[in-house]
Amino acid sequence: MSAAKGKFVFIDRDGTMGGLPYLEHPWEYEPYPFTREAFSLLRENGFTSVVITNQACFARGKAGDYDFAAEFRDIGADDWFICPHDSADGCDCRKPKPGLLLQAREKYGMDFENTYMIGDRWSDMVAGGSVGCKLVPVMTCKGPETFGADREKWAEYEPVYAAKDLLDAAKWIVANDIT
Image (cartoon, rainbow, N blue to C red; front, side, top):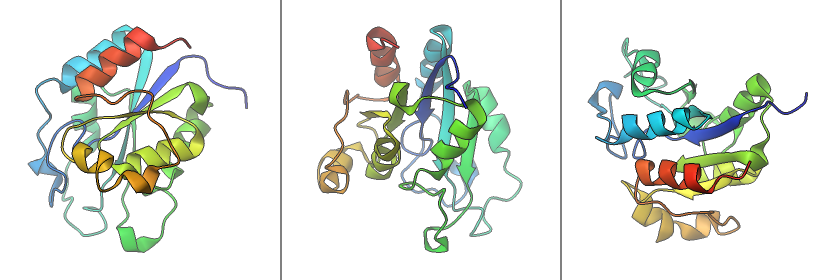
């Protein structure tokens, strides 16, 4: 399959788009005030924004009838891929494994070398780095730990930019993308 035309950005949900690092129920999530603006900026500049998120609430029976699709459409995401497994399930889609990113490539035929991964955790950086994405960690939520105590977990990968938050990341990508 040839690479899809277009520019892609993977974006983590919890801690990157909003919310707390660990939410028991998905309806406890609140987007940061700048999240919609970040998605809008990316879209206006030709990027396809794809949410990549681990949601163990499904495996733990705590998702209820929460409508992730409505949330992601409302925020401005173009598509989303959700891992419904718990960490003990041993699946290939739960970050730090790259399964969700591989599903997106299967759907879109994207070129990972020209795709960005934005997230606040080391697991986001490993998932994106392992397939060759350009890494843009954010300093919201788990970001300080990602660059501190957790830096050795993704030491083999270097970010292209360390952003203050999702909006800063989107602005940097728009200003610096050469694909």
